Amino acid sequence: MTTSRHAPTLHDVAETAGVSTATVSRCLNFPDKVAPATREKVTNAIADLGYSPNFGAKVMAAKRTNTIGAIIPTMDNAIFARGLQAFQEELRQHGYTMLVASTTYQPAIEEEQIRALVARGADALLLIGHARAPDIYDFLATQDVPALVTWAFDPRIDRPSVGFDNKAAMQRMAEEVLRLGHQRLAFISAPTEQNDRASARLAGIISAMAQHDIDPATLQTVETHYTIENGAASFAKLMAQKPHPTAVLCGNDVLAVGALRQAQAMQISVPDQVSIVGFDDIELAQITYPALSTVHVPHTEMGQNAARALVAVLRDGTPMASIELETYLVLRDTLGPAPKP
Image (cartoon, helix red, strand yellow):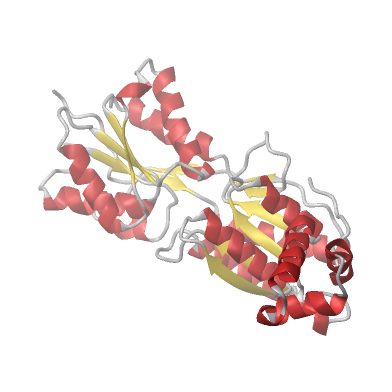
């Protein structure tokens, strides 16, 4: 767990750059009015120190805005909606406001959003997954801004999180698929690079296959972005293979719904000819036909626990401890025995 460090001040930047505090302020507010050489010295000093102007602190003597930022990969679908709703409701009960930013799964944009929220006085941040550059965590520690990771739990990482074991959750689903006799498996996933949740779910499938003496190299994988349309296109691509898979596991329910829709368009019977399973158990999974088999993620519990942990560290200095939440399989109608040859 990171420890609090002295947050660099305007004076620190001025001293490092060898200029006055007034010059630093001018660089920040009116950069065009500062000589390029001086501006470069100030910019380098800001980068070296990890300084961020806290605009909220200017207007609050306690240097608190009672605002907590939540930075999520996407707002395009309902993957994060239930968890964020619970997070916001719990924060509100404690007098805090949530600000949400979206990264479209791009690390550079996420870093911009983190720095922007800190600059605007966010007291703490909720982040999705562990995978990001170490200097981002260093920046947050320097600014004394607590950050809590959600939607992931990894006991090997010494950083507070409230989430679940993505690998174990998907491995349990893959084991159920294999138990039903399926041997030709496919996986429709989000891009796994710099996405620890997606890569862990892939690792879970591979682990289950290896334990059942099925060569993981036979797993057909398509990586795409989380939309129904992409799920449909990926399913069509997989079913064009010979031999095609008898079970398609999807990285979330949105992709699975797209796959199911495409199966119906191709007049492929689910689960008689091919099984399709998802991950998340969002409301959409309950209203498909056939109803979608999936992994239930404790979104509400995760959001509530994350809010309580951040409020406790801000108000009482209570250290944040990692909390592992349980997932479970929801076996509905899209998973069945492997079709007979």
